[in-house]
Length: 303
Image 1 (spheres, one colour):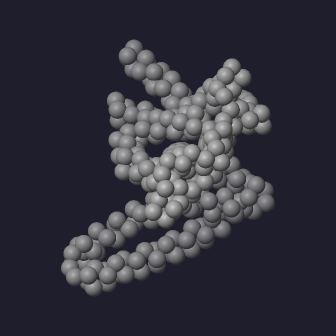
Image 2 (cartoon, one colour):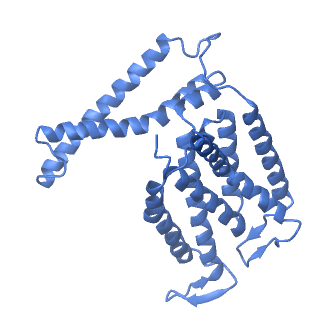
Image 3 (cartoon, rainbow, N blue to C red):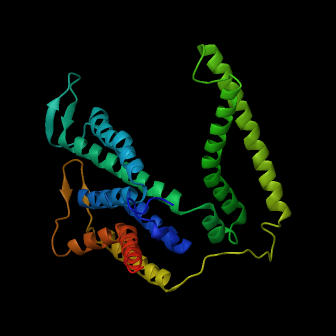
């Protein structure tokens, strides 16, 4: 368990898997669908807040090392290939124009990419393999097994690689020392070991699941997940947000275009409620975690 004095515990991950899946489906879909800068800023702030509150310094370093340069990179690369737009700022030596619209579109694309990456990172942390099995095991058992194994395989493969690399280092096969040819041979040996391990692990898992009758008709499965009142309230809230925001999209409340000139739906009393609901949807896990943290602190202070 992470240090409670520094980080919030992710109480949202303890909600019913249907709640978790519905939430991430909504935020990821709307993050890719809504291109209005206000909506993108709200989603990005909420995604960053959620990630930093749960993961702390690790997430902050990831944002500084990868996400911020990614936004800047797309902001610079897009104008080099996209010359559309009515507001011309400069002409390149090739004669192609540099437009304000292409720069803003590049920033928007970078912000969207970072937001979606953060949501998927949270999704992979919250939606564990057992939740996938619970949700889809009876409907599509083969696909749910493949998905759960894929999600579980990546960290397991990484951990096993570290073990193999350390074992090879102990017998004098350090991948970081020696000539280039020696390093290459050591890397090939490690790769061969890992491929063999992965194949054996897949065969053993398949045999184990088959022997336990996975996917057979009438097979029952143990589950620790039960739908309680808090899950029902969360589903009602998420359902309301999904329907309300879908109506907002259909009414062009989030309308925004970059080319050939910038046009957007004005922020007024008819559109602000849609942004407020979108912000409420995105910030939901942070609010739930904060409320749970305050409850724990209150209980702890009375002890």
